[in-house]
Amino acid sequence: MKNKSLLISLADRYNGFSPYPILDKINGSQWLSMQELELIQLSSLRRLLSFVAQSVPFYQAYFKEHGLTCEDFKSLDDLKKLPIIDKTCINSQLNSFVSESATKPIVWLKTTGSTGVPFKFVRTRLAQSYKIASRLRFRNWYGVGRCDRLLNVSGIPPQEHGVVQDLVHYLHYKATSKHEIYASEITDENITDVAKSIDLLSPKVIMGYPSGIASLAIKLKNSRLDIHKPLAIFTNSESLNPLQRKQIEDTFGVIPRSDYVATEGSIAHECPCGGLHVDMEECIVEIVNQDENGVGDVVLTFLHTFDFPLIRYKIGDRAKWDLTPCACGRGLKKISSLLGRSADVIKLPNGKEYSAANINMRIANYDFIGKVEQYQIIQKNKANILLKLVLLDKKDVSTPYLFKEELSKIFEGCMISLDLSGELIRGKGGKLRTVIGL
Image 1 (cartoon, helix red, strand yellow):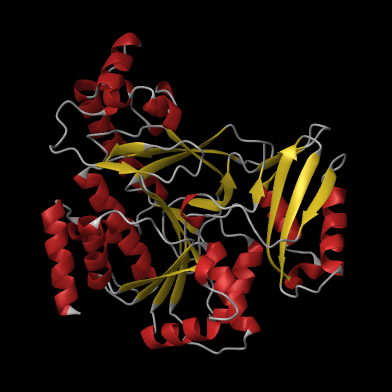
Image 2 (image 1 turned 120 degrees about the vertical axis):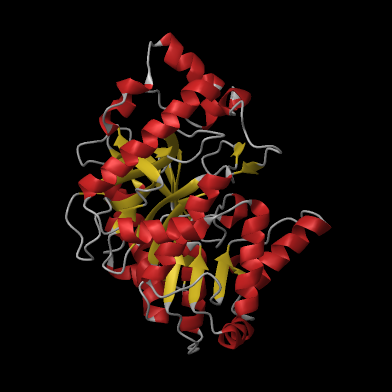
């Protein structure tokens, strides 16, 4: 373990990352009151705005055109004086978001484009250090360290990137005791071998797409294989719906917890008491355009992205606030849940709209849902919806029609068609969206 920690420290130093001083700081600040944390955010915001107003062409022009100075930002609410940006906006004028004093050489990162808009941005060393520190704090909540054995459950194998990049990837996994399996390659025929490999690894934590971990859990349960139980399970990249949460807990005896993180930065994490806490020292979260239920679009301001500022950045997710105090005692704000992508909404001919969260919550209460391995609801057009099902028992003829009948009650005026081929639509990297709107 000491050798692995040394390798990680050397890698951090080589990349210019310094997460551990930040981790020490945020381990303390998480226990401050929300008001004290907001003062820290305001101080960080003013420092960021002072920099971008002088060094980033997009904000130089915006401040000048609107007669703004840093003195105009006296509270977090004053953020509304700045425009909301998104991937399309940034892509159309990419170089204007790069600081004139950006550290050279510039390192570009790409997202998977799960919103349908591929996107690249500049990785800044300070921002990456905060992202690492925020995720390490999250792991610490569950007694998991950076170099503890970890099983990562991904969707599909990645493309090869060349000898050097693949070697760096391999060395990183070795240093962090990280191992990877791909849900798309796990079958009923090889599940016994997969189970043996997991037992041999004895991971302290399992991490990955909730759809992939849930699929693994179901295959293990169906095979009646009793395997090593991890200390914690963290899900990311997709929304964790109630059915998946139950499937995973039933098999592993561990409640899966949400790791709400993007390529751009760390956003929020679920504590052992079930509160999804915002990483307030790293970012400001706004929820705008809220509907009557308080559900709105997630807008982020990453507070340490000086070389490539993401200020009021609409990431494409939907969420709502949870205003109740958390039993854990942390002052960090809470999101009630991550409710899927902005596009994960079914819009009916009668004008009604149902978000992925609304639909998933209702489906979780159906008596027959225990016979379903995975489902996907796709709106083809205003009046046609496709229900894709993967059944636990391929010979089950009643569940598909019960499911279809229940959906017909929700989606009034729509024709529901069935697809029992077992093939679900996945995005890049194998990400699964259970609800896909127009």
